[in-house]
Length: 336
Image: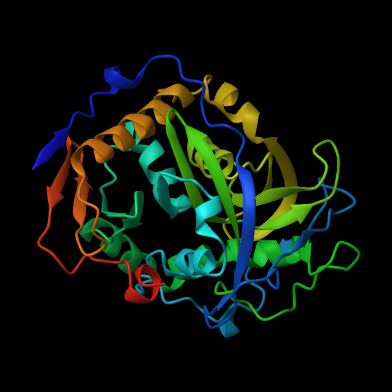
């Protein structure tokens, strides 16, 4: 077992950050979570005329909501299907994974109470990373299955329906069936340090407004006192989302005002809060962890998995037996 020192002082030095992510493609998941190599789930941001005077009832239609199975581990299967349909040789990448894992890893130094675990396999010179459920994450999902908590988790999806349409010249249809299954993903390529990565990330909508030109936008709902700047920043910067539209809601799920944040401004805003976080620390941690993975995972075999785990102290890397329960690269992918 190899160990990775997570003392924050090791990562607090200048960093050039992440280069602007380049979009390689996209894909959609339908209401049954089936993969489609198309833009069928892409939505467009329809701006309200007055951000200071809206009335969005996020509880509207909740009773008939079609809910995603939160306990089903989809691994990186959808991304692998997209890669199967495209020419991997043109990607020239060191790492393939999902944005969600990178997001979690970048937050590690400021979220040491949050455990993580992921499997790594080296296949044809590329490192594949696949996040695995932890006891902590499964307990959190189970806790959120309570009636009120579960409904509140769904409010963000209803918020999107108030602000989006299937085309830029259409109107939002908040009376549509309430579901959190249909999603649209971008696939991007980015570089941090010496590492080139290809990963997928869910995006909420496309905006065609200035000053950014056509771009992706992220939607959030919060109460007036709850800001999660670090989480918003890591999630958005990884896929090049420049704008976050936030709905200020009350405890009953009524949004009365919208506010826009620029992703690049979030670190500056964070410097004014207690125990601020630093982007360079987030980037350097990810950069050095990828160095650690490359140093310890050296056998090129999709049936072999190394398991990386973190629970507040040093991260560990353990080589597992061949064809372990954590193996995640399917024959339909490796034999293609």
